[in-house]
Length: 379
Image 1: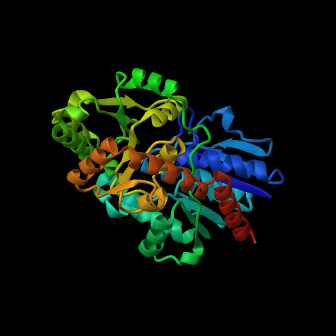
Image 2: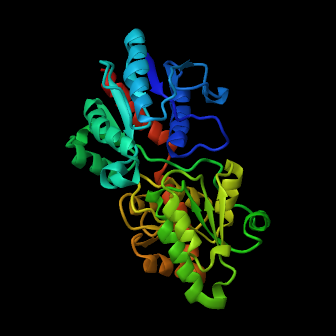
């Protein structure tokens, strides 16, 4: 059997973000579990050899690089469609929500969220027009859709009027390198990143949906009302500057306790693992998420979690696995920070519940969901 896979998010570099991480982890298991299958990885640019995940992987570079709506169309409806027509694989697996409409090859498409449907102004005009035209058509044209949470499954079914029987769920999972670390290693991490002081940690790209403006205002309120007892508390923001980050930077510039906030940019995986393990708490309060992988990465690192009470995040955190707050209320977020700062018993309970919650998430299990979808559409 020959299966084509859209691997354009397997980008060179030290750190894979959400879709890239999902692609790498699930494909690593699929390739290893099914040596009888030839997987044709379709890249949109020169690839890193480490993404040739087994002897049964054949790489192909199809141009142009697809990082713009016009180029999305050229790549998916042009280059990919022509490749599929020429080679006629048994199925086309696309891991980033996009696929091609211009093929008769059976399609399995992973959709990570429909944030653009609910918050259209968070993306640029051209992206928005592309998404609103193509994404519902991609979902309906795919023989099977895979969502990354039950919340996202329900959203896809409702928003695009797709039968729930056509949608499976394959969760994200934390990478194996996220684990608790010894106190000495934690002290060294704090020395490097927070002047040796305890810190709250945010991990994610700087873009509107991550709700960093409210988090910064809440941290400022927590510092102001907490007085000397929270004087040493720091906030680390780990992630790249993405799009529409202006309001985030404005909120930062208006802070009274600006000096206690540190923007690290994106960091390599070993540093990210160390930052989770040494944090007082991970604070992750987007107003919408398809999954929310920092929640489980923190839990795997033995770090208490504060997250939003909306969309997929309570589902992912698990019962008792996080302090849940209203992301639209800076007062509620600040109250959550206060609870985590002062209540050591609560933090210990969250770590224990978070550890138990991790049993629900497995890249191997998610790869099996993808394989079941592929074999179903190939019949």
